[in-house]
Image 1 (cartoon, rainbow, N blue to C red):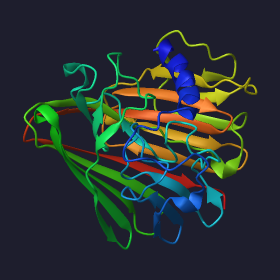
Image 2 (image 1 turned 45 degrees about the vertical axis):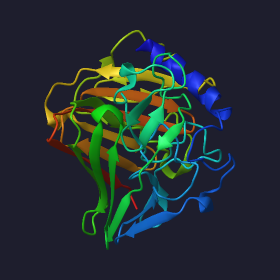
Image 3 (image 1 turned 30 degrees about the vertical axis):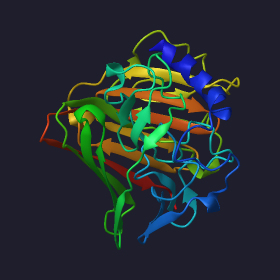
Image 4 (image 1 turned 120 degrees about the vertical axis):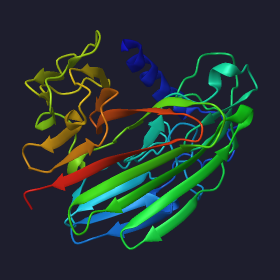
Length: 332
């Protein structure tokens, strides 16, 4: 797991010079917010901006799922929660609430030039015989259009992919407001319409920064268990585990911090992550209706990213559902 951090650092540098062979083509670096078309959901407390998965933008790369990518969340007209980068390609074409399936489907069955499936995107091409790397610019062979359905307080993106060698799925994701509460849900349904079992894990990267305040002392990430590092990770004194929280202790030295976390059980009740700025009282609690398969924590001065994973194991003809819930708070 320690190797993950080094790979992620390499990924950030690699993204800046990514290949132009990916098709459909993402727009050029330097894209501004107005270039990504949005669906906007609003109630009395929240405004939520969701990127349209069918429109060309910088966020249609080969890593993150194109559906349900939340650009920004605004509470009570003034508190913001999602990282909106000046350089959209900084972390492999992801922003805000960006989700990814960690393990692609059928990648290990093929050699260079073969095709595999990435959930929420479509069919990609293996451009060499190296192991899979989430940061690599795999060409996109086909990305079926999403069916988009809108209600007053929700939007649903559904994609059907029929890939090579009997890999196929129907994947539906709904972003919804809960009444007039400061609560947002991401509800998923993945149906295996192919002939092979779908076994992977899926997570939300949660690119967050509260009210654009640089990440550091004053921020906490609190859990419903006592966390510990799952491996040998150098936290460099920047963060530490205190009781049930991850606490910032010193300023950043220019490098990201990554740690895989252990200590949770198979109880879904422990799938709760509270991110808060102790000084302002602004925060969000992220919960899931599923047991944690893994929990990763990644942070830089520009973002704080708790990453809860769900295990997916779906036989042909079966489906799996899971929901992530975000509850926002402030002192007003």
